[in-house]
Image (cartoon, rainbow, N blue to C red; front, side):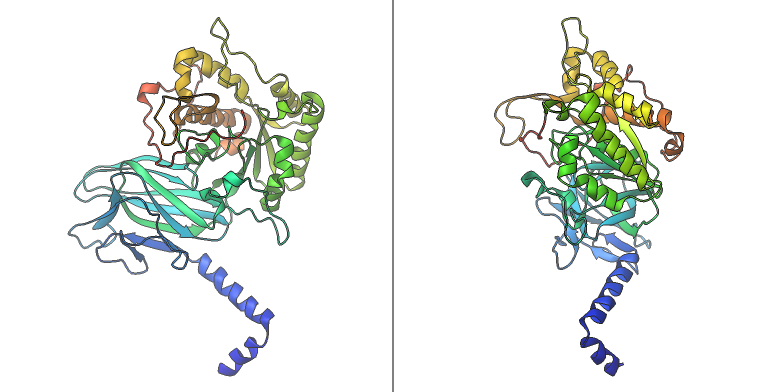
Length: 445
């Protein structure tokens, strides 16, 4: 054996081959974390409040939040302790790019719990999982972890503001939040078979990194069955379809796409500002290009008309500020037999139902001195609050049911039908905000 190893040391190629095989084998094995200071279950890695993240260790809590461990009597080592905090807290694991199935155990032998989980840049995965005293629940979800690298020579041209985003690093970061988040165990297993829904779009679609901004793209993952479907959101604030291609975001998507995957396409807000781009000519041609490339990869394109801005006339009706761009999308879908979600039409109903004053709560309208670093009020009629983003996500899910019955079969059972004419009452919308906040407005308008 020693002689064999000595021979391998002389060949860099063979050594690289062996190391690559070892890494792949390690990644293929489930990662299991047991949270708390009590005894640790065999096969699990013990996680205590002192386990801060380091790149060398490859896992741990992100700094800034006071973490607590609660231990209780009991023979079940997975359930006799848990980690919690008085506010949202973050746990991160260093992993290669890919899709992962997550299983989370929450609960408290001596009390209740209530947990919501977001990953990366506030991407909603599970919502309001409640347990009664002595009850424990396992929650499953599937996440996408990505990098800007396309191949050995190409990568996405990230904007400076993206460099600090949690979804471009080599870590999978969990945000545990809710009224009483109590985390017992966490398991991570690679998933190579899930159908991927790729999202291409702008600030109305992107995983917004900071409060008070949100988008429908970061809300929809929680509506799909775990293990079967994963959402990979490549949208970015300020992008037009042309700049999305130019930054190689579409090239990245097509480098990952496999047969049966979906590409949701929603642009217009920034495209309409390009004076040389006409809705039924240049813009339509760009849409057709993405449709053609998707089908060439064996994927399924789906077009989404862009939602209206909050712009009311004197009679309480929405003014169309998007010109003919939504109609160009409808025409493209019809001509190329592509499924269509008419979010433009649904958002008109939604905003008009809420009315001119109440609809402010669906957008980022924030009083002065509310956000750290921002003394002035914010009145943004393009970008959404958590409430507005969630209502638009419900519109998207309802649109999927009508546009693609096959994809609709992968939705979580029991999701009620949604009518934008009867949205969730704002005073009943209970959604935990993230501690990640920033006064800087997203690119685009």
